[in-house]
Image (cartoon, rainbow, N blue to C red; front, side, top):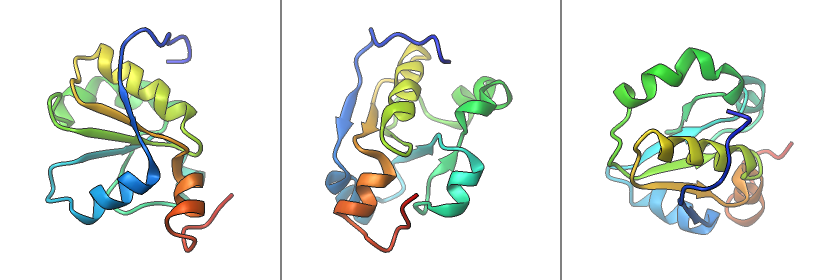
Length: 119
């Protein structure tokens, strides 16, 4: 996944938009967090499925089975870089409504919910 080029389009949403979407979520959002397990242990948002990029080989073949390629899919990481890589990869796998969470969980903690620990 590290050799991914950003030639396929995907959208971004702000952490403020994410908070509104999570508040009004009726189970239609697919939420993916690509951070490592040790990062999740420090700080996490409820409802996100953890697919660490370092474990790509373990979960990559299951993505199209576990997730709906047409459902809105929001991807989170620490600052928004790894999640952008994941968004790019998901688009290449046929996902049609992928959004990177700009600024990641760090921005969420600063701008939305200071009770979410920073690291």
